Length: 378
Length: 205
Image (cartoon, rainbow over all chains, first blue to last red; front, side):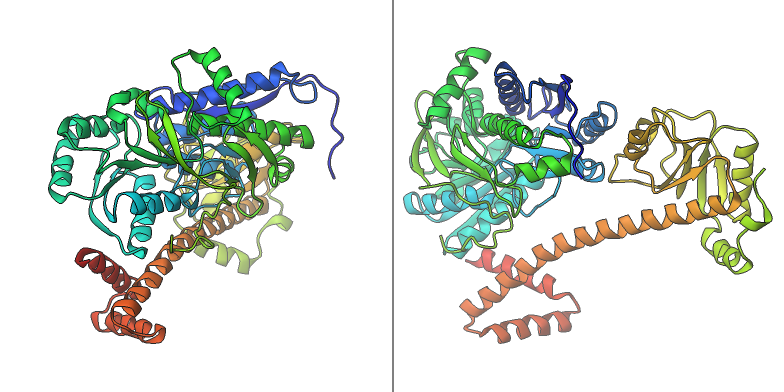
């Protein structure tokens, strides 16, 4: 039986876990901004049932162990049940046991490798069928079928490359090489890789390099004199934030598949971009991770308004099936997997460091994290 | 003291108990009073090896089989693991009197609860429950990991089967039989054979 909610002006306290230091802090900082911007908007319009949303923010410093202990602290010491956070899959996998055992709800706004489900997680970034499938088809049509795979050495790149390898193979393409580098890789570490690429002459470099070393890869590529028009780097994670870090001249011509780019034309996005720039600086672009972090808080607010409770079981059932006009277009949380149904877009970096959208899905694409329905033929 | 005759385990039960608890590494962290000493003695009689840690350390030891510990306000943060990935079974000690902080109890994620004042049968029951609940959870986690892994391996076998059907013009049954024969003659699992087929196919094409 649901308890009758008492009248109270107590705030709704929620946890926020994005790194402000360490090797993935550049992108996580933008997720923090997206989160805080949405919280401010919600509070400015009167909160939820007259109650303010108050975020408790910790810095887990890009360290999965700290993510787990901060999640524990949020739930145990701060009495929080809802947590917005995590960028790398290693950090998500560290937080999941905590939210599962103490019955919390983690909102995860990042592209990930799929093959996962938890009753204690809402996934608002794309699964492979919402980015890799379209990207592979696009690359084969426009560049060719010989792929070179490169990634950072942890679970997300290895798993995403496995999915990409299968897609390439199933469509009579080939993987001519595959390399993994540390998340902390420096410029010099990419030199031998690009020498090999030059020797092998693939049609496409598919990169799942993430974090600060992303800039090193693209800069090295540019220094080596390779041509993005003939052999682009194609990525699922290189966004406006990474392009800003590497320089627009370095990024220009490379390809990314994502549900959102800053250049997307929707009313919700015009407002999102304007507010983001007003709040964080006119030179600060939005990106797919900041957008997911932003709209998931609005989804949460919508669910909370309906449930009027932060109790995970009640809140989660209010979240499932919910729709929201996000900057990327209308999104919804599907009831089968608690993953968001999102848009698929292919973007190419332009001379100003933004993305020109060169292809997009006709409607939102249903999340299929286990690739059960997604056909192997492109 | 409340170790009345009526509370004592039956002879059959104590025999089973001894077998199960012999050499069990148990940490006890509770007020060092008569009750505390009684708890230690009862555990020792059940053949467990007991380490008495008091005053409560900032960080409880993480290597024992079972921890008996007072429910104190900072308990969750003194537990040296994150909830959901426990390293030892945890029995939380409460009372005397009703439990004031139910949230604290939930956040400590215990496998059993033991009330002061202790009785020997309550001690034994909480030890058994803590052990069995902890082990059951671990088995469930193991099963989920195994299922995830099996899902991945099955995809590998499916892919290898497709490669054989395409490149060697085998039908589905033939492809599967081929892999099984290879696995048997090489004394490896069919998933190992499947992975070798997929890898070599990718290498050669």
